[in-house]
Structure formats: structure tokens, C-alpha cells
Image 1 (tube, helix red, strand yellow):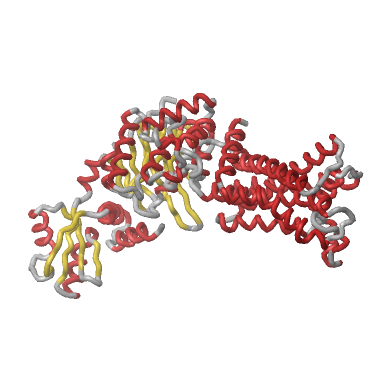
Image 2 (cartoon, chains in turn green, cyan):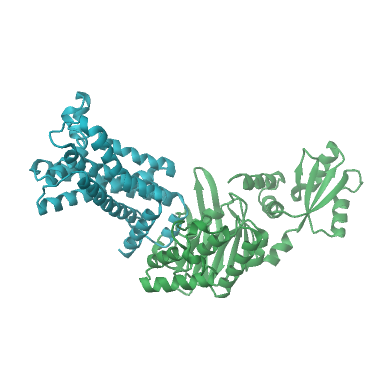
Length: 331
Length: 246
């Protein structure tokens, strides 16, 4: 196969009990690149990873990994991939070295080879001393490192990482980022999911934003940042009538909260932009009583991105808010 | 095949390092043996010295006690993260579950030696021919293998390790058999069940072989029940594994 794409997904569909999790997902991951799938809880990130790593069968669409079909050529796909899920795939009562040797044997290595490989990985992941201790005694960061090491025993071409740093403290997260960056430098294709914009920004060559079962946006970090404002401008209305007018004017670009009389719109944080937004939404200067600028949260990013797709597809501004809520509520 | 070996080695290591499973599987059967012989034995009328009667029964009870932990470990595997790793490595389900079953059977073999040693210490004597002893050992291992598959299937069906622990209750099937008291001493409503359930022919076959009595009539039902339990349980385990990993 002379396929330059390590992963190719076309029109992927998956639903669980009437809930459409993936609804026509398309994406292509170039070989040797790091690809981040960004999305909130319940956006379908884990479902996507499970289908790509052959654990779950798709309802429809076509998915190839390293040129092999994930349904028809499951065994071949499994020979070239590894998966590190959200929950550590380790035996707590085995030592770090024993876990790695076991994975080596299961990957078809002989006893001696498995021993050598385990020792090498323990050194590489700074676990050489901890290797003789049971995993039950490890810290969260050490477990993640060992889990990642275990996924590398068979030297996979494509690595899937499902939320690799969720639940880790900042130093552990940064250490893991360095490790993943090192793997990427070695030419391995890495597909990771994350809830953290910063993580995708730090690690990935390309970032895809998953919302509503398909990609809301895709591109390099720089391309996405141009589309997504880095800040959020909260406008507090002077009263209920002013709020209604403000929300109407903000249209598809704002998130309105009636209870607090607040309309939030994306902003770049610059004074000129804030001034132009105020002039556009409140030309008579009687609707906005005061305002505040916040750093954009992932919700704001989704609002900006899904707002575009929603207005393109259906028009009404309200649907953007509905999509957002779905994304944040479904776990 | 090498996958099954690696998974069996893993199963043995997990067995040795989980103290609760080890205590239930290894020390509980000899303790129950002592309780039955010294506390209840005086009141028992089995036609022989009670220890002679009850040791084969304890060997059967032990199969249930040592296999119960398999339900828990299988359930923990299926509900934890490790099953995804194994499957993404293309380790077949037969190796994943079969490894636990083989480890469970090996664990039973060690437990059985311990039960026999304690039995000998308190006066049990076998009168078996070499062939009879081998046959008894074979039936016991097959029976433990079958019960281990049954426990694995329970572990696959259970939603949590706590509910998988219900496999421990299988041991009551052993109590309602000829393992501890002759069926004729039971209330009439229980006799029909006790005489015709699988544990009784297996116990009687092992007892006859160990004590050098004619075992002929018990062998066929014992082997048929044991084989049947193994085949049905392994089939159920395979179906449950497929259901759980769709």
C-alpha cells in the first residue's frame, strides 16, 4: 500500500441505543504526524478511538489504519497499533517489570527478548528503580508512564492515546507531554484525544474539534486560533428589555444567559475589538451596563466553532446553544 | 498457545498475590475439614470413621472454594482497562479467560494436596490402587476445571466484582450432596435433588476410587456431569465474552 495516510475515516457513523454519537465523521491523519481530537465529555472521542483501535464495530462508514480496514482486517490492524485507554491497563499486584514482560510475551517476544525490552522501556520512562515494585504502590503519573511504556512494547506504527493526561497534576502532565513529543519525533503516528486546548496545542500537528458527532473544525493550531477567539467578552445588560435586545443583536455569535442578564461573545482581548463589539451591539450606549473579559474556555471554543456550523446548516442562533449543552451534558 | 501460557502465568501470579483468594482457596477447606471432623463428626453416622467419609467430600468442596476467586478476577479484567489492551494486542478471548481457568485449576491442585495432607494428619487413609489414585486425581482436576469455567462465566455475566463474589455460594451445592452426609440421612424432600445433582456422583466416584471400592456405577455419571458442566460453561463464557466486547 502506498497510502500516505496512517488513518483514514470516511462517513463514520455510530449510535448507542438511539443516541447518535458519531454522525458522519471524516478525518485523515498523515503518517508520522500527531493528531489531536478535541472535544468535551460525551463528544464521542472515546467511541472514535475505540472504533479506530478495532475494539468497537462501526455502524457505518469506512475506517482504515495503516491501510487496513478496521472491521475486515482487524487482526492486521492490531499488529501495527497500540492503545492506551483512560483507565490504566496494568495489573496492580504485578511489578512494573512483570507487567511489561507479560505484554512482551503477549506480543510474541521470547522470554529473553521480553526481559530486555522491559528493562529498556523502564529506563526510557524513568522507572528503572520502580520496576521491581508492584504497580499498586505507584503514583498516578508513574502509572501513566508505565501504561504508555506497556503500549510501546511491540513497537507500534500507530499509537492511540485516549485522554492521556486527564487526572494528572501539572508536573506529571508536562513530563508526559515531553515523552509523547519524544515518541512523535521518532516518527510514530500518534492519535490522541483531549479535553485540553493547551494539550492539543503543545503536542499536535493537526487538531480536530469534535462536536455533534462530526468535526466542527480541523487544522493546525494556528489555523484554529485564527477561527477561535482567545477571549470571551461578557456583557451585562441594564435590564430584561435591554437583555432581550442585546441577545437578539448578538445572534449566532453569542451565548445568552437570561438569569444573569449576560450575553457572552467571543473576543480577541484587544481594546479595539471590545470597542467595536460594543459599538455594534449597543450603538445607543443604553443596553450594556458593564462588561468583563475572560480567557476563553473550551465551551467558548465550541460555541465559536459549532456556532459557525450551526448557522451554516440551520440558521437559528439558538441551535448553537443547544448543541453546546448536549456536548457538556452527555457523559 | 503462547498467549495462553502467558495468561496462565499471569493468572497464577495474581492468585499468589491476592491474599483473600489465597486464604479462601487454600486454608478454608482444611479448616472446614477440621470443623466437620472434630465438631460435627461425633454425631455423624456414615458407617465408617467420619474422617474417612468426609475427606473426598472436602476435596469436592475445595473445588468450589478455590474457583470462586476466578469469578472475581475475570470480572475485574472485563470491567477494568486491561481487557481493551489485551484485545488491541489481538490476544484471543480463549487465552484471556482460559488463562484464568488453567490458573484456577492449578491453584486447586495445590489446595487439594494441602487438604489431603491435613486429612492424613487426622487419620484419613486411602486404600487406592495406583490406577485408582490417578483416576481420582484426574476426576478431581477435571471437576475443578469445569467449576472454574462455570465461575469464569459467572464473572463474565457479573457487572461488578462484588456481584461476581456470588460464585462463592456455589459451595452450597456441595453441602446438599453426599459430600458430607449420606443422602439417605437427609429429609425426603431434599433426597431427590441430592441424589441426582452432579456433585453426588462425582463425590461417590472419587470416594470409591480413593477407598479402593468399586467405582464402576459412578464413573460414567461423574464424567458426564463434569464434561457437561465444562462444555456448557465454556460455551456460555464464550458467548458472554462476545457480548461484552462487541
